[in-house]
Image (cartoon, rainbow, N blue to C red; front, side, top):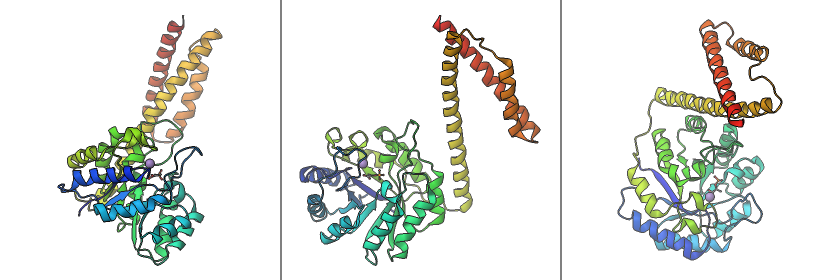
Amino acid sequence: MRPIIIAGPCAAESSEQLFTTAQQVCDVFSKSSIPITYFRAGVWKPRSQPNDFIGAGDEALAWMKQIESRFGLVPCVEIARPEHVEACLNKGIHTFWIGSRTTVNPFLIQELADSLKNTNATVMIKNPVTPDLKLWIGGVERFMKNGLSQLMAIHRGFYESSENVFRNAPNWQIPIEFKLHFPEIPLICDPSHLTGNPHFIASVSQIALDYGFDGLMIETHHNPAKALSDGAQQITPETLGHILQALTFKSKLSTPAEIDLRKQRTLLHNIDTQISTLLAKRMQLVDEIATIKKENNLPIVQPSQWNKVVETYTDNALDDKHFQTFLTKFLELLHQQSIERQQNNTDNIE
Ligand code: PEP
Ligand code: MN
């Protein structure tokens, strides 16, 4: 099966910006074996800050429609309100995506599903910003119940308050669960919003394809440095061409066992990532504690304190003796490391 590829800028800024980007997309992909299916641009942008660029608005719909007649690309627009749906349908635009800040709100999703009832629109539903599979599934079901059959889902990662390498946490197990629930609905990965960083777009795209995703939505701008929104994560059509050429569009994972194994591995990988992040945070705390001890002339090692810690955590091991032994060894190692770190830290302070 051919992958579904959606390219185009974060926001519609001007007719010149849209047409130049679309022209470059055509130049790069006219001879490519991987065709671009849809051209995206946010006409009304849901921004966090009131003074941020909000897209060119209604005026841009006519430009998006021209993308179809001039370049043969199907235009795709974000909708968040029934008025957006009406304006698009009036201009002959029938392909939409729903942003993660909208999927999070069942009232809004229902209004959008009602405004598209029994139409032949194509709707791509992004995951909600929160890692809530039921909300995502529920959003899709609202469109299904209203007779829409051209549905797709987009995984763009999940908001996390802590700082991470990626802009949003992938939580791969959630889209995989989604795929198990709706095997017939094409699942697209949006590595642009997921990573927030062009350097990771290729590798995250490959992971998604290996997981059996059906396509990619990648933000593409003719001049990312000048983009009015999400400039840091957008790539040029030329770079998109290189990335797509280098990807392996593998066949889908077929057996449930294969999918299950991937899912469990992902969970394991997520846990390992959390363990290393937590250990790094622990070391930071140890440094802060060392400073407090130094400033207050307190001893580095307080044995009674540590014994309490070991007892509390080895209780978690319950009756599993092997695990209890492992956990005790692990905690001792951690303690030793903390003491050494505090000693070094104290030496550095002096
Ligand atoms: C977008 O695709 O431009 C967008 C706003 O995405 P998200 O809803 O994933 O943040
Ligand atoms: Mn964007």
